[in-house]
Image (cartoon, rainbow, N blue to C red; front, side, top):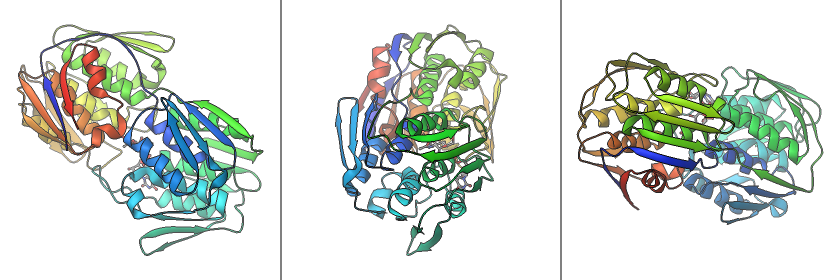
Length: 417
Ligand code: EPZ
């Protein structure tokens, strides 16, 4: 059980480099087993989900090691095609290995990922994509089982722009004979990043970032080096932290375009935002304004992962901020904990209405998911007294040293594993 202790009332000042993106490196690590090519990744964040992925690679017979922010993968030795429950239980998004193992081995067994704190996490779109590429798909004893004598290119029509299903389809299509067209694809920057990595690996692919991705073929390169993109949700987290605590913070490395929907809301609340190439500066003095409506949507809409963080920033704004969560069915748990700090939040279904209060007070609160946990730490920055966040390891899944990053900017925060 980890404990975060936050003393509120200290503004944030300074500059920092944003960590590598969790949601970019996980599909890249999965795709790294597509061939026997040697892979070297740099700017890899130190996250529990990355360690869980490296353990899956090793379980499958690959060599995978980390030296500082460099991870090297030797997939030649891959022998396994099954990811058991004890490994998928540690990382719900391990379903991202489905397409890569199927393309490499012709079969794959992955324990059904359970739901998670955000609500049910179905994988029907992932399975439909594998079927569209010629695989037989079944559920046997709680495991997803896919088999093929050889994947065949085809049309993958995604009914929803699922990030993971788009990624699984792109990766599997690299192992398919002939051309694959993926329609209804997710357009997140992490999808564009995955296309870049797959191209470096030898894929003839285009369209990532639009809703139609085409994969024409794959001629593997013997070795590939790749630098992981900056984490736009970690950037959004630091922006909301400065909005909550006040201050003047510069973020280096991040592409301002990737967090445009978040900075638009913050500017509407009265924050000063200045952008440069691969850097962002936010200045907040005095009380923010309410009046914003935050509607989560697939990219380029407002990201669901930033909703809890923006909720934290809205708690003391002068006025009402309305949230509409359209991606996950249970993503307001942090709100119930924020109410214990004196926040005024009315939650009904997909809507949450925050009426800003002048003061919040520290409290003992519980982190129940990754971004919700981070949002409670951020809310503590703006509360009087000490906020103690109890966390079953959620925050470390997605943030590399969040306590050190905030303390370096002036926050009074203490973290114990
Ligand atoms: C990715 O999850 C991210 N995770 C999530 O970040 C992020 O919240 C989500 O995309 C949305 O942007 C990673 O990239 C590792 P989806 P993913 O498939 O791929 C429904 C974080 O905090 N759906 O785009 O699982 C699903 O229920 C995490 O870093 C189906 O119905 O998300 C949801 O309502 C949390 N059937 C919606 O689509 C499917 O087969 C979006 O899910 C798949 C998804």
